Amino acid sequence: GLSQQPAVKRLVSSGCDNLAKIWRFDDALGWKEEHCLRAHTDWVRDVCWSTNMGLPMNTIASAGQDGAVFIWTQAEPGGEWAKTLLNDFGAPVWRLSWSVMGNILAVSDANNLVTVWKESVDGKWDQISATE
Image (cartoon, rainbow, N blue to C red; front, top):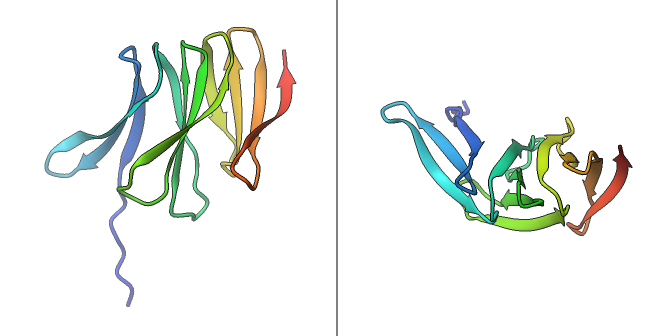
């Protein structure tokens, strides 16, 4: 029969050190830092892990006091994380939320706007909606 791999427990955190950090749980050692995502120049206000819908890749969004939102992708487990600037909003970004399918991202910022973004087939992110 097929052997099941044990589930990997990971989480992503944001903080006032301008970093997003990925943590992995080890039964013997507890939570250990696995990766450190560096791009923001001020507090990272929110991070959000996208569902991968069976794909072997991981995607995280990070939002900062610096007004930037980055999309981080890891093509394969254990691989390097690549960053893409989604947008510089020119104001602090407070919260992020992925759609259930993991391909649409809602962003709320200090301009009292909620914008919605979708990745196109060529990997470019397009704004598809904005609401005050």
